[in-house]
Amino acid sequence: FHTKADFCAKMEQYATAEKPPSFLEATIYSKETSVIMIAEFADADTPEKKKKIHGVNYFWKPWYYLHVETALTRGGFDELIPIRHYHHRFTRSVFWELRDMIPFGNEWWYRYLLGWLGAPKVSLMKLTMTPQIRREVIYKHVVQDMMVPMSCMSEAIDKFHEWFDIYPLLFFPVAIFDHGPHEGFLRNPQRCLPGRNYQMFFNLGAYGVPQKVRDKEEWDAIRNLREMEHYARRNKGYQLVYTDLFHTRAEVREMFNH
Image (cartoon, rainbow, N blue to C red; front, side):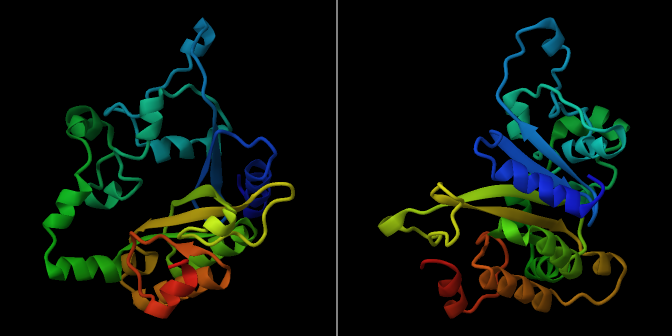
């Protein structure tokens, strides 16, 4: 898609369909460009289908998100991805974080000669962080996921551009169900789809270095993250708790049923 309006309309159509796709996600490459990926389980049971098998996670292959980006120039296409490859589609590039750790990691010579080494193990990298490095990661680097109702789609993309200006962005539709008296950590939704017991939200993820930091300009991490947290609460949404949080105790209890 080459306009945000087209992307938002089509994504809402797919996500709220009576029979939505088994797998639905998108990668947003700029405020106006994005690619929606739809997947269904299938068998490669004919010669024609076997020709479409594409093991996207072989170590010599281009990183998945860059492979998907080619749809913006070549147009839509379909292929059969082995299920294990699909589940690990973002593993080799750690979504797109590896581009900052190993800038040449997607170069053909690196992939063919050293790609078999795989991506660095994130948990091991965290163990080697000094307090100073950890501080730099918090204030000059972003790993954030926000989950808000589908109606916020266009505005949320604009807000992420304003707060972070990091691309690509990860987009996953999420159904939050009304569990009645058995409400869990996430509160029962307020606006379920007609005839259904769930409301559609979406997870928008930003991972990387903000453009202002790259440009050696001032970027206020606390102010921008606090604005994101306020936006999520105001729209009855959520911030994923594995990320860096700046909530007060009262704000956490306002966001979560906790």
